[in-house]
Each structure stands twice: as structure tokens, then as C-alpha cells.
Image (cartoon, rainbow, N blue to C red; front, top):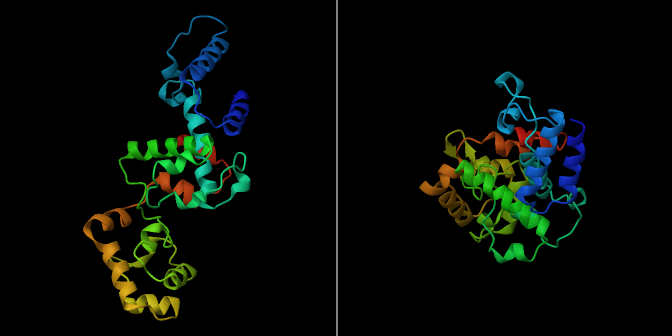
Amino acid sequence: MTILPKLIHLFSAIPIELPKYFFTDLEKNITKFIWNNKRSRISREIMKKNTYDGGLAVPDLKLYYKAAVIKTIWYWLRNRKEDQWNRLGESDLSKTVYDKPKDPSFWDKNPLIDKNCWENWKTVWERLGIDQHLTPYTNINSKWVSDLNIKKETISKLGKHRIVYMSDLWEGKGFKTKQDIERITKCKINNFDYIKLKSFCTNKTNVTKIRRETTNWEKIFIETSDKGLITHIYKE
């Protein structure tokens, strides 16, 4: 549908919470066009299904809107403000994704477009039933680690030597030994820093979150380029 790229551009340019009737009216107009102003022969829900499922592959516009809004998370993770909607906001939003939850008032200090993006992102995770704050892709320099009062030099050394995510601290099924980490970083690690890090990562609650299998949803934002990103999010 040639109208779809134009709508995606609109969704990306004005990423505010759009009312339900906006999409209802759009779908009604598309239905009228498809059936040449005659009564629809099948329901809109069936029309949205793929052709091999008996549908017409009409895109779900509300879902495309949410995909266009959530796309900005990809840029947050890379701290690329120049690629976002309008470069507004003063906070480093890369520290909000896969990190310790922020106080609700944090989002009141940021533009509505950022708050809207976060609410849509959070809703997806709630539907998946997975904790979005502590994951295999939680960064080693996250607030989770800094709050353990580990020396900044230690965290910096880990990040510079291929230990980017919390899940990188494992070797096979076991947590890396202090000697393993020192061999990788080529420098000494404080004993207390290692003990605090290991205790946090291997306790029963946290280890199940850090060591679980990653989902396709997460991989989109970590391993996928921004080419065709909205379509990847939409399909997932």
C-alpha cells in the first residue's frame, strides 16, 4: 500500500498518543477504498491476516504506529539523539533501557514523545511477562552494578575487554573466576569488587533474569540495524 510509508512518516514525526478513533477512521476509509464504497464482505480483522491465512494482508495501522514510536529505543541504546524525532530532552535515555527502573517523576521532566515511547515499550514487556530492567543485555556499566559500589576503574576495564553485558560474566554454565576476569582484562581486580559482583549476579532471583534465553524481541534492538527496523518491530 503506497499510503503506508506516508503514515509511518507521520507516526514517526508526531509520536504522541493518538486517540483510538484516529485509527478507526483510517481503517474505515481504507475499507471503503478496497470495496469501492460498498459494504465490506469480510471483517477488518480477517482483512489484516496474511493471504495464506485467508486475509488480504491489510496492515494493522495501530500496530504500525506503536512500532514507529518504539523504534526510538534502538537510538536510545546507542545514545544517538540526532536520529530521534526532534532532539529534545536533556537526559541520557540510554541509561533507562535494560537498567534499574527510574522514579515515575523522571518521565515528567522529559518531553511527552519520550514518555509515550517508554509507555509503549513497557507495555510490550508486560505482555511478554518478562522483567525489562535486568536482562541478558543489561550493560556492565548499568546502575545495577554502580550501586554495588564497585570501583569505576574495575567496571571500565571490564567494558573495554569484551565484557559488555552482564551475561558476558559467565563461562559456559559457571560464573567467570577472578583469575579468568584478570586474564581477560590483563589487570588485577579487587577481591571485594569481585565478590560483590558475583554475589549480585548469581543470587537465585537475578541469575534467572540474566542467564535466561534472549528473545527475538530483545535481539531486534541489539543485533538489528536501523534498516527496516519498524517492519521488524511490527512483525515481532
